[in-house]
Length: 129
Image (cartoon, rainbow, N blue to C red; front, side, top):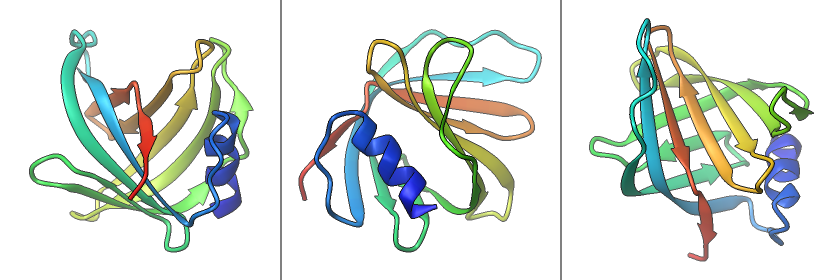
């Protein structure tokens, strides 16, 4: 799984040799079951990825913490984006799916999908610790 996350991060032309990655998302949107996507909202949300331990933390208040336990092979989706999907368990033991995606315009996106809601964080940029 560490290799799959690294492949996706390297795909964005970022030289990353660490086992921990820090990024900020600058936009987000939400979609509830049976509804349309919300408008994009501006934000500065930190995202922490620890590939050694398969931990992903979204620094909202309160923080959302996920443990990845299964990953797909990276693939190109129908819209031309490069995607890897991770099955996760959150801090409340809810099962979900994370989609790490690079769209055709080379914008990094993180989708967090549960039974009744999907969040998407976009315009994600890595930063040094």
